[in-house]
Picture 1 (cartoon, one colour):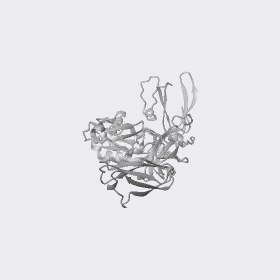
Picture 2 (cartoon, helix red, strand yellow; picture 1 turned 45 degrees about the vertical axis):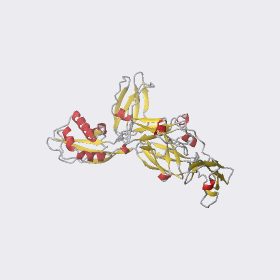
Picture 3 (cartoon, rainbow, N blue to C red; picture 1 turned 90 degrees about the horizontal axis):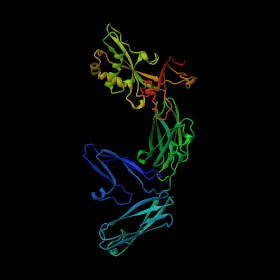
Length: 476
């Protein structure tokens, strides 16, 4: 059974946390029980005790467990559980008294350990409150009925030891920089000087700089001041085992826009890095596509046959056929000259373009690689497209397609009783899709991808129009 994350960490000030428990699929488990305890507390020792815990997961190979209503203690001190062991338990009673060299800033609970018959291990909690660099001398003194049977290594009734406590290291972000940014996502690398949490906020470029409290306490998403600039926020855990370096990945960004990302650090004791760091990123407007050509042993192709070819390629590659477009309906300048095969009598070439996944192209297999995969399964493709010529290899040409951008915000130029006129212009040729949705709270807002594909809605009041432009020209 595995727990993810392996180390479940409480954020400062919080009284609950969650983690995921996974059981191997081949393990036939109908019910399993989960128990937890604070460090130094005893844990359920028997199956019967464990069944009395109230965290129970049934008939699931993976489940999220939430622990709540946990007492939060302000961490203004360092507290460590310690143990005292005896090789053999006393027959009657043995007492060890613990004293420390500092009366202020040092707490030992309990400071008297009484070992009764059969007991050979007890624990105590050592707490240092001032958290300054110092050496603390502890003295252990034997007493009790069974004292004559025990002595320390030096043959004495007492023993002294020294514990060194370290001072607080103020949390600090050493490095926060952009690693890679694509059309809709960006990866940042962050490095700190100690364990803790990185809280980050993503907003549109030029947003008001937030405070560490606003970011740490999740106040931004509900703040009126950030209503038009807030994009996303989150946190990552920084651990020594990860070399104090973590990657922050932000998704769901818009192509061709600039964003400001702010990061603050909070250590496990609640100390904050008030300065923090920020970075400005810009998402790309260009992305990779692939042009390829299919030859058919017939004189021409109908619109229906072209659609069937697109769908067959999509099904073979297990992708959405909408990602495949005929080059003839794309802007003439979109693609590079194709490696056209010379047409013979009774043959026709179909030039197609494969685009990346619209939502997150960086996470998808590249279009060129997909066409290379298509070449290996073209025999299966021919079973779907009976006139497909498979004597020559299906090859791909890598394209860099520029994301169309409005040269200016679409402008409403005329409003009449039953129609409106808008003026718009694109940086490149293409089709401008406009959708008119009645202003009601429960109206479903389509994505740009749905609009471009001809969004189909049951709402008869929704009006959809399209206009074609050759690029850098106004269109009504």
